[in-house]
Amino acid sequence: MGALFGLLAALSISTTELFGRRVTNEVGPIVAASITSLLAAVTALIIASLTDGSVIGRDLLLGGASGLGFGIGMSTYLHGVRVSSSAVVGPVSAALTALIPFGYAAVVAEAPGALGYAGAALAIIGLMLVTIGGSAATNVAGGLPFGTMSGLGYGLGTLVLINVSDDSGSWPVVTQRLAAFAAVAAFALARKRPVFPPRQYALPSLGAGLFAGLSSVLALIGLSANAAAASVTITMFPAGSVIIGRVLFRDAVTRAQVIGLAIVIAGTIAIVVG
Image (cartoon, rainbow, N blue to C red; front, side, top):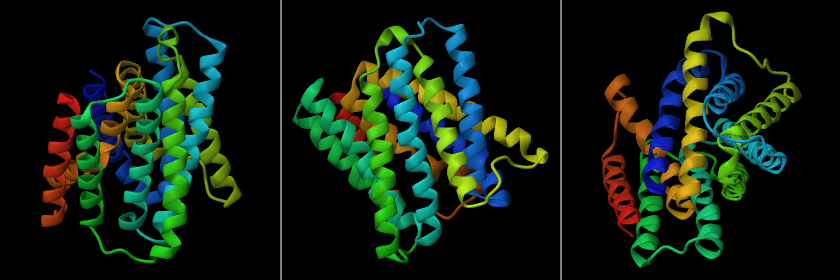
């Protein structure tokens, strides 16, 4: 079940990119990340209010700490893509995002079998092919530090969620997304960038926020069910983004990306079985 909810979270993240694509293209990725984080917090608040869960101070703090990690991960990723490319920043960030919580869960929580470890390795390799195969790498030296910081932020942010109790329901996601918004907004203000997009981008922003909040709720459920499996399958969202981009936007897909997608699917199956 952990792998399944992790995949659903990854699909939600890809759908978030689908809605946020227009905002990103028109007013920039920092503004898109800021408004998406804020509206995701509102979405999580609605879900938490309508479902079972208790407001537990410790879990709210853990959610906030997770959000700071996500905010740092998002901000450094966006900046890294600007100075380098997603072909450099994406694989490094995705690998660390998967490996940090996977390693923690394998040691502290439930240790997967040999097939699970093999599946995790395959999925990460395939994910790298999906990302690298899409564009040429530029300014590798400039992009690697930001990819590393992004992966550390996302990875540690995900790791923190493993320690959230089931009794709190979706409430930690509320503080997670609020903290992420605060981190991205601070980054935007420090660079003298706007925090909110113009009104004409309200609908795509709402769609992005809805699925971003849903992705965090699904991820939390997956991590609670099986942290090791979910921590890997959550990071499959670049594969989903490639598929959505190809189907809905007619984006070009290279042979390397097709091979990468096949490897990701094989690795995911191995994780579920293992």
